[in-house]
Amino acid sequence: MAIRPELILASASPRRLALLNQIGVEPDHLLAADVDETPEKGELPRKLATRLAEVKAITVRNKANLAGYSKNSLVLAADTVVSVGRRILPKAETMEEARYCLELLSGRSHRVYTALCLLSPSDVVKRRLVETRIRFKRLSSAELEAYLVSAEWRGKAGGYAIQGIAGSFVVKLNGSYHGVMGLPLYETMSLLASNRYPITQNWRGEIK
Image (cartoon, rainbow, N blue to C red):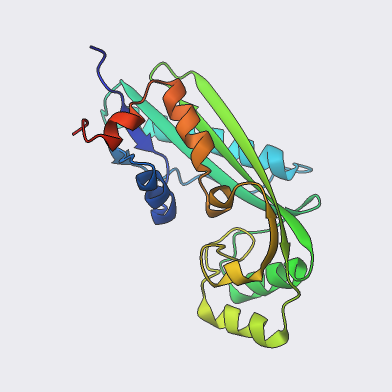
């Protein structure tokens, strides 16, 4: 019988961990990638998401090797980018950045790209890119100011978290809700299954 590969999640995000747990997957290790997420000159949103997911996976693979983790391990990484046209919105860290994002998104459509990268134990790279189109309602001044005070936007791509208060801003969504949260579940499950990670055995309680 083949030995189950260990799974390393290349993220410190509680949200991504919770989404993995939702499909019955508990990573063996959590390692943050800590990479420079600055877009390259002229880089398009979808290319940025794909590049960063792969950079995160490779960075964490190197960290895991240095730490002496099992060689029989999968590394799963993800990156989410929010854009209006070719314009890439920041991960809001200040109220000014959040205000900029929300004023831009108010009453218009935008796109969210979430890229996945999975490294096999032999470092074969598999990728997926999920695009979701979202339209926001026009935010009143009172709604905008109240949302800024909530600080729910902090550290979020595009200055909002769809699983929270900002879910009430969404008029229309075409794509993956979980992708907007940061980890598209169908694509994640497909990638893991393609590397024979025993997801359904977890559901039956056969994996300890």
